[in-house]
Image (cartoon, rainbow, N blue to C red; front, side, top):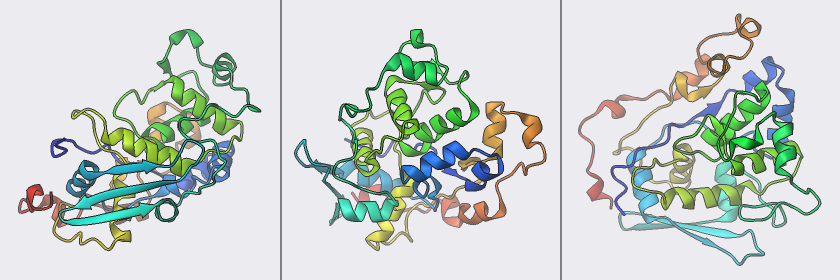
Length: 279
């Protein structure tokens, strides 16, 4: 499969001050409880050409059904890299536990998930099938869904609707069902790799951390940086139509430290090495 034409899903990260300043205490509690608070704040430069090559060679090996262990293999040129679950958790700032609810599992029996109850909880219409508009949800639940579909398990489209899989995960989050996020995210990376050639590639910031973990030379490849729109902040709430009067006095741009990863000259350069040199 040729990954060269596949672009990246727009990377986003959370400005933690948004939760504290807007009293989004329940969302903050959920992210802390699920050990996602650091993952959703990851930011750095990213390297789309290298990400495409890494996905092209990506192999995920998951252990037997009753295990949450996995190993990641990828290569750049002639160099091959192996990442075990412990190193993946360290790189991604995610936790791992053998017994936690993981991707592919049925919901825990003591939780007893009920779709109709979940729809009522989030104020969604169960008759909308697999694409329920997010508009009826509370501000906090809409922002939780936004983080899910843009950062935690990024996807190419349908960001403005709650799909049935979203509903299960969100209800689990709001029910304090602990989720094995390292396993979920590794599975989602494998799903992205196997997606159609028209789909985009996710987790580009996570890939940067993987490249740095292996001390891969990033000096001679296309580099992109994060800018204001990549930050989930006050402007995100404005776009959702959330109580504008409540946030009118808040800054309309990302805080200054968010400019830290703006693109440098390498993003503008037309003299980038060919991907064939690394494939």
